[in-house]
Image 1 (cartoon, one colour):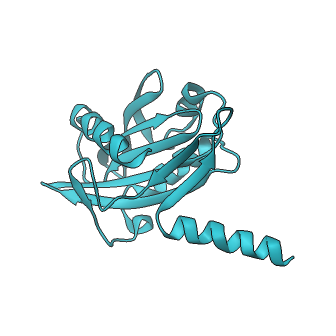
Image 2 (tube, helix red, strand yellow):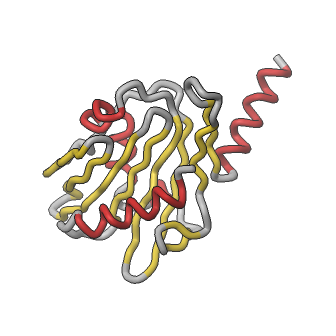
Image 3 (cartoon, one colour):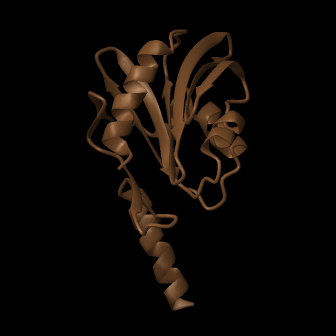
Length: 168
């Protein structure tokens, strides 16, 4: 019982510290999602991600993706008139494209997937918000605007930069 409790505390400490780790599938590599102080040119805020406008929609999208044993973390990043939510984690994802097809907000308005990356829009009451996501065999990430906008092109570029900084 003590070993199980210690393991749970270690997992909680890793998530609380903003780092999620998963043993690689075959090559022994370790997948890491690390919440950096800066990502994609934006800075991480102290805001509670669960209080952000986009959070309930993106959390629902991840739930709809049906990942078993996912280790997830989230943060709000801001800068130069941007306010975005990042939700990402590690999990064994057998079919990343199928995960992205399932992992859509329940109020999705548009969706386009290109391999293992996707972008779309979702409704928050009468406002439209863009989001972009990626998935690999060992990790996933969602970047969603907390402010209304319809253009996913700029958000796709930002999501690519954020992925480079967060998905190691």
